[in-house]
Image 1 (cartoon, one colour):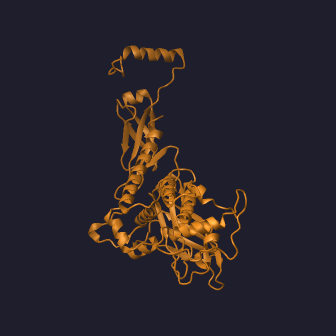
Image 2 (cartoon, one colour):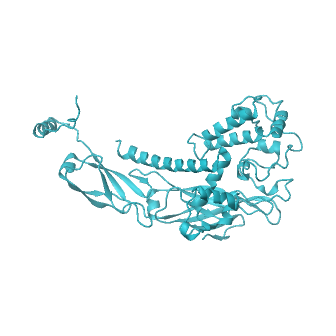
Image 3 (cartoon, chains in turn cyan, green):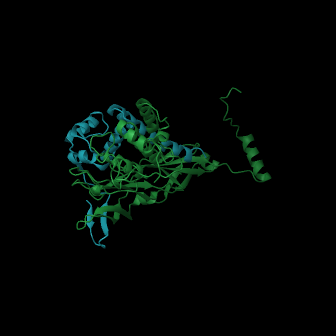
Length: 112
Length: 325
């Protein structure tokens, strides 16, 4: 939870936040934040762009899932590609990130 | 105000066809899209490309742009026509670019196509004339919190200040409020982990909700350790006799030094696992890996050289025996 306290001057505001206490975001709010319909969101789920917990009929999303949805929408819109292509792009970006991380380890610890 | 040559931005001729413009945009979007590009200033370049495409792909906007910019010469300043631009009702929902995209467009664009104060420096969307009935969510704000690897391991707190636009309830004007955020970061924070502060971003427009603040964690590089996921890597330099005969070595970890037993016959490049000594995580912590690096002492004296020669004579060893040369 985030607590907001107006304890400073009129111009300042203090927010106390804790990373370990993250709110889950309801599906309606996710759609509103991302500017998409429920149908579009379901399509992203159908293409496994975000992983859903199949057993619990998940109706809430965490921040990581929200960010992934925002990235997917941004890629789709700005690169003018299909949802399927976005799924491929995101998978490749994930793999690229893993490989970059492994190369960093390799260069720092094996190539001396 | 600086004139923006949209044709030059897309690298097309002024007489370019709609297809040429589309192809140019797609090529440059792939090159500079900030989610995929590692080019320097990719984000800024992508915004320029987006803005240029937004104007040139639309026949009416393109005509307006061509007409108003026709007398411009390189090096001159640009003056928009009096009374604002031709497009007061530019921002419609359902367009190719989101309101968030359009919010990043330049003052030049805003002056041509409407949307007062729509510069990239950050704007309030609460005071755009001619948009009655139009509801828009406020812009999100993002900030990065840089912490050391040790802080990510142990947990820490941070304070940061953000300037966020707010609409004064009494006067209706936009002011910038400083928000001080005190953040608690738990042990085991991960690179890229985000914290969302709902409704703390820029105010919405026309009754739309406020945007959010997103705080993203960045873990700074460490001189000794390299983080990969939840695991931590460390180079373990050893002497040839330690590798050959085995040894007990004290090894640093993020949680403090631990004893490591090097087995006799350890080879260079071998990866030794220290279970649970990586970053805290659920269901279980990451591991630390020590990568063995055998350091060869330099033969500095005659006595050192004799020692190496004796070893060469007494320990016949050919690491290249599999070669056919």
